[in-house]
Image 1: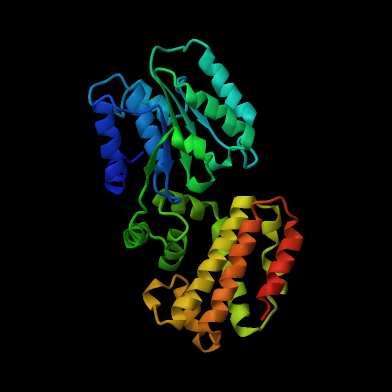
Image 2: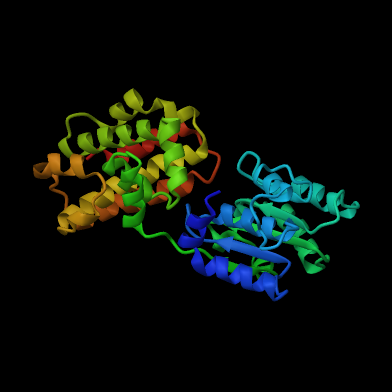
Length: 325
């Protein structure tokens, strides 16, 4: 964890948590909310280390307790993540059962729930009962990008801490300094503000395939050389076996391309991400602002449908037919 970078990117949050700790004013439940890539998980670990570190100037980042938190091996720090893109009641019940037992170590206890908006109703209700009767020395941190999807009664029993998006041009500068192609960096910096997450996505490789697919679809959408449906099933069939998150990422990047067309039409060139592609085919950008906006609305609607269990092959067949001009 790059603690200096964390303090630079989220100064206000670090100040709030450190001052609350020093003054003995930490609450028993926090909700860390904000856009993707704003270091919410890193901040949760930072607070957890602050609570279990026994050294002066906590968190010291060097002691055994701090290292175990960072390595996800501290017995007093539990991290709950979605399973099959949902957090179930059984996961919360297991957490509560563990807290009914005597702690192995005499220290504060911390639980971190990633993507708390994915708590199903029974899991949320089980957690709510726990929040209604907070126990001494137990602290909860819920992390979400979708605060509106978190149960209102959970929000009312927690302190909401909002994370600010990191400056877009600063992220681009950092990525270019790391040797990342500017166009790729600009596209992915619209998806997440987390520099390390962007580098990880690139290293995994699939995201570059997705960007290439969007370029292929975008060019054919503009020129009419090939049907988007044919293009997708020639180059994009790999998405049919990928996760819901990667399919959402594909549509997000496709929306970025369409938004770039909008920027081109209104001469807002500095905000265009797909610079090489857009400026290579200017004579084909004949759609009106209203028509492009309609396509963006359609894609947003399709992205929302990914929240449900759907047949991806039928889903993409329908979506590509919508893009067939």
